[in-house]
Image 1 (tube, rainbow, N blue to C red):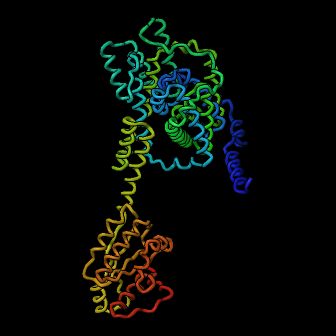
Image 2 (cartoon, helix red, strand yellow):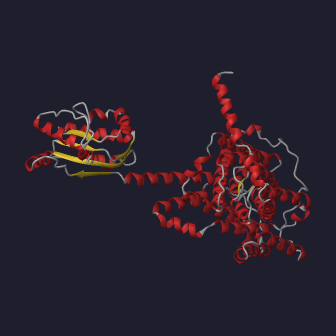
Image 3 (spheres, rainbow, N blue to C red):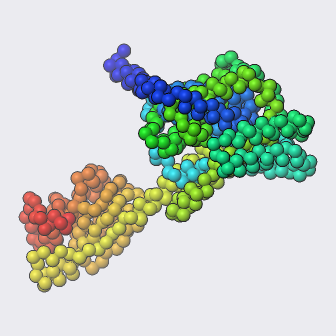
Length: 574
């Protein structure tokens, strides 16, 4: 084995070892196990209807949602990078999975989940978790708003008690469901959905600590059973346990076509999980997640869940928030949540099977409403026009396209608007010449033939043309001095535009001198040949007074001697 290969293997081994649980995790588990157990039980009660609802919405059934919550929840709790994160099926992931189910079927979704898990582990090994910090807040807010709208629209068929129409877009599906309801209204289903949603929303304001979601679902199920409401369709039969792990679902022949959906699922899992972990950190004091470990844990969770019939999972913001608010301090709480759900799967599946689909739709409608933080949206839209545009386009992209394309659009728009704002900071200002030790007559002569411009800000592709074209239009002078000490950055485009402006001036017989060029900018300027144009006598100038003396010498036909160092007064006017 070559030395390079050996080093590579050691590097990978070291990185993977750093992603595994350590002593610090065990120490945190031992601090307050009773509080963590209680928090885990509370989260499980909240998570049960969500797991069922998201499983149904994904198209793989309630049992897939439960399997995901149990398996992915347990694996991510042990191997994830946050002590407080709770993982499982989420609305955002459901939005991505629906078109995959429609095109490739349930086995395609399970294969995609497995592939996404491998990609997440690769991202963790490459230490890509730190790049989450570069996602702008308006993109996250627009992304969340769009997800909330999509989740709400997805529930329309079940909330109205009609079969889910076949359509590529959720807006079309919801509209067709409304049309079906208008033809044959199912007021029983609509009433149950609205009642459950109202109980959750109003109850959360009245007593935030009470899990109104499970109470409302239980009440709706009891009413439907006692009143024999046939119009309230139940979930249906559920298996009394988790299926044995299996690889028979793999679409080996379709792996090539499944790469793109797998990348989309992995990107969403990374984005939502790291965002949720960041939210958890912000709700506590002293907690800080490891983004690379979080990606690693989510990768393992998404490899394990499909083996048991589960769908791709992510960190769940709503369940994580409940976990934090109920006092969780370690991974024990999230692991307990998974264990409690497993007990429900084994012991109470016949009862769970009787829950009306309309009740689960009500739970998810309320969840969608609660995802939208009106105050945050107002703050973003009022901040700057660029933030508002980014937020709106990201949300619209989520509705019209899909989540991954929406995030890409949001990032592209945010980046373009940020570059535009930075480019506008660049200025080209004409500045008065320093009088120095010149007489009034000499200074008047210099001012008549020499002009100095100060370049201020970035000289790069987004803004170089705007003010350097202005420079090329200088008239009625013999010498132009460019004061470049305030140029913050130069790229190849900016250097080329500067070269073009200097060449135009020189063709008109105007000498161009430069002062204050920073050492870090010389390589870029020299690479395109502009540095040679800025030092007609073989050098550029450290300070503006030196450049003025050179300009004066040019006007008198004399080249001044080079000075070794500027005086303190000259230093101030670079």
